Amino acid sequence: MEIKVLKSYKELSSIVADIIEKQLKEHLLSKLALPTGNTPLGMYEELVSRKLDWKSVITFNLDVYLMNPDHPQSYQSYMRKNLFNKVNIYPDHSHFPFRPTEAFEDKIEGSMGIDLCILGIGNNGHIAFNEPGSSFKSRTRVVDLFEQTIKDNSRFFDSIDDVPKQAITMGLGTIMESKKIVLMANGDHKLNILNVAMNGEVTEDVPASILQNHDNVEVYYCD
Ligand code: GLP
Image (cartoon, rainbow, N blue to C red; front, top):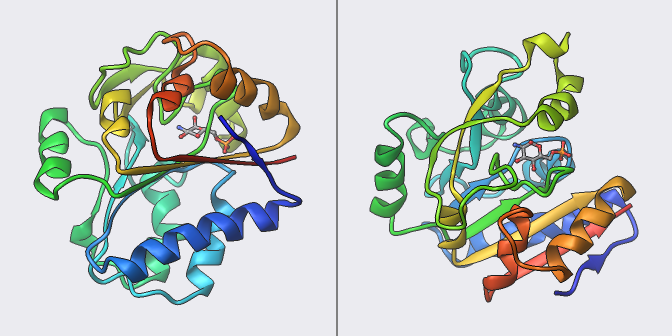
């Protein structure tokens, strides 16, 4: 698979924002799946500055920690701070994975499916919180986070003990039903896993490798 290498983080952010802008302008009733983490921060900033019309847009976040949604490090707080409080999206239109997870899946299905899914990639090849070994058929569910992921994400918390040990994540099967998928990766520490995922064996040991089986995926990287 082609990995499009970009010159800068700014270019990465603006190219992915261009793809979302095009989607929103061409389809007023767009359904997006959205990521968190450091990588998409510039993209959200870029989107906010473009003053797009979000009033008919429906969003589904890819994952949430199992924690108080009002905690400053929850993904709900992240999304409010970086996007939802700054655009004209209806609060009822932004969804986060919840239990019972089948009901979250029903919400996606009831909206007629995800048009555009934006993904990051974890250092161990996870997408959303689908850790290595996740079934390619997996649906939204509660998962235990790997030690490595807890360690990687501890930078956002006061102490590693504060990092939640569990999350609710969209499944790989759920993600793969998106009509279009864009994966963004930033930093040379991600290059090796990106190459393995996009050009190595398609295996449940590398969750992102499932994207090789999707016919509408774009992958962008900058160091
Ligand atoms: C977390 C999120 C993923 C994200 C990954 C990479 O584990 N659950 O959805 O892709 O982090 O984050 P970062 O962009 O901060 O490297």
